[in-house]
Structure formats: structure tokens, C-alpha cells
Image (cartoon, rainbow, N blue to C red; front, side, top):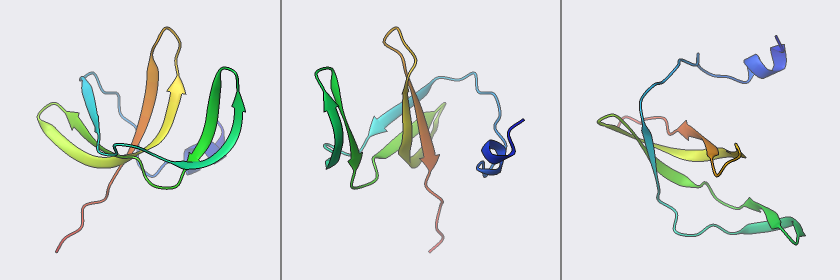
Length: 87
């Protein structure tokens, strides 16, 4: 077990066997280019990529924190939920 990877987690992870739908609230994203090749570009967005996550009948606001290529046209997305604030 790598202590540095577990110390970065704020909450325990639980298995989820329900479909998840993400709706992107951001129409476009811009940022500073880092590198480019004939097959793609890497850049750092200057703002949060805001999303709404639907799990079952519940919707939760959040922002995209990671996207990973999982091959065969599949992409893994990691979303951090936006903490609820009380007025």
C-alpha cells in the first residue's frame, strides 16, 4: 500500500454499480498550451470544468478533476463534488 496515495483521499471509496451521467456546464474551455504533436495537444484549463452528475435520481454539482483514456473508445472521468453551502 502506498501511503501517499491513500493520504490524498478525503473520503472512503465504495463500489458503485449504477449508471452515472455527467452533463458539462462549460461550453468551452481555454488555457495555456503545454505541448502539441501531430496526434494531439495538452493544455491546462484556466477555470474549473463544471459538471452536473446524475446518479440514479440524484443530481450533484461538481467539477472535472481527471480524464483517463481506458482504450477501445472508453474514457474514465473523475469528478470532485462541490461542497454544499448553507445560507
